[in-house]
Image (cartoon, rainbow, N blue to C red; front, side, top):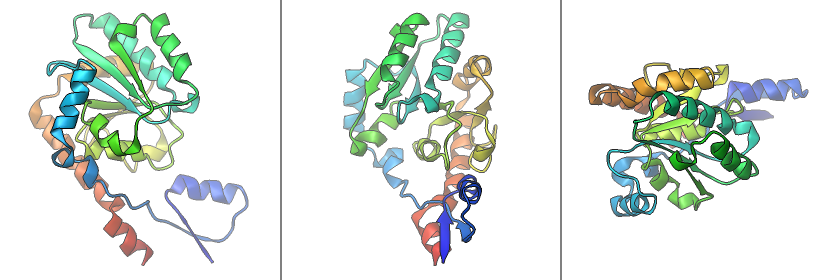
Length: 229
């Protein structure tokens, strides 16, 4: 009698394949509390930092999720390589968390780009440990333009990370450029924006985080329940 879709993009897709039933867009209800810093075990986070030799003054750029071609992680690595070429003394690390069919290809790409010393491929992790890995990062970067709702972006927001996302229309409802995160257009734009993101003052970081938490309110479990009811 009725379909619920998590985003307008999915509703448009359902229409395109001939579904003419009544549809409502209701974002998936998510419990973000497990991703908030105060709810993540600091001892476990510290242990992971020791495991990957992440010092307190290392700026960590995080990519987290399925490592597949459609996620366009190669664009992020190429942009990071261009950033390093212009900022050779910057103490940064690119952390790729997740497994998938493109893992070996991306490992080879990092070697081709000459950035293998600055990139760590963690591989797949236990889903229960994902909040810990978000806490390893300073910013979350993604070039994927295949997301239906951008759940990893929301998890990163809940984890108080700065968002750097490749621009596409479906993310406009989630990310407001300069308010709760930032868009980049391509690898060159990513390389140009990284220095200013890394240099963000604490006051701007607090502002971004505050706006991000407001962005998450429509996606709460309570809001989902109310909308479906």
